[in-house]
Amino acid sequence: MIPARQFGFHTTADEVLEGIDLHGRVAVVTGGSGGLGAETARALAAKGAEVTIGCRDIVRGAAVAEGIKGHAGSGVVHVDALDLLDRASIRAFADAVRARHPQVHMLINNAGVMGCPFGRSPEGWELQFATNHMGHFLLTNLLLPVLQASAPARVVSVSSAGHMRAPVDFDDLHFERRPYEKWEAYGQAKSANALFAVALDARVRETGVRAFSLHPGAIPTDLGRHLSQEDLAPLVERITATAGGFKEIPSGAATSVWAATAPELDGKGGVYLEDCGLSAPAGTAGVTTGYLPHAVDPEIAARLWRVSEELLDQHS
Image (cartoon, rainbow, N blue to C red):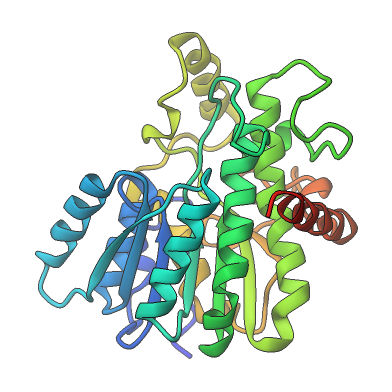
């Protein structure tokens, strides 16, 4: 165990990894062609990890990989196609990872969409829920054998304080009866990300795989590409007033990296993190944003797991 460390809002991914050697460790990062995913992949590789980036834009992903490889001492970086709205693509990606790696020590479910116009997956699922939750639900389950083979291993799901906008609506998951509202849909998807970590950890902790979810902070990246100026103005005002302000990308990726590697988290799981530490209920002193009960409730998490399995079985 390395000495006790103190991290916070401005901690960077590199600072989280000081004193940690990841040689011989394998990491998979979804959405690694830019933003937080690219920084997460870079930071892990800089400490010797072998990293696979999953992304839709292979050209961008390859450019990220080449940039990482240009730094002396970095681990090997692979790039494979991954479209979280396409179950065939998810299965092909998982097959490629399993063929390359008999063991995977870290899976960082980072990819996602936010505030996009209404759309549906090929199965008819609402787009944000399908991408942010269902795609990662399937991928994680496909990679569980290699995660369990490398235990102790960790699954990290990037949620968001956006989960406070809405719980999971089991009566109308895909906006078939209610009007579509993009922030409500985003909130539901981010609540699902947090609940997934709770349910996954409960199911697999005895096999040595632990799961975490996290709020990375508010970071200007292309995640906001669907937002108009009309959307951005109140969002910026709210973040500045209530969420501690914006983070730069190196700080935004820090909690993901901490969740995947921190010795402080040994023996823990199923918890929600922020600012490179354990979070607490919203309104708790000393916590930047915190979480609402609906995002960490074990019974809701178990129900979401069952529903997710049913959705996949219906369209297998």
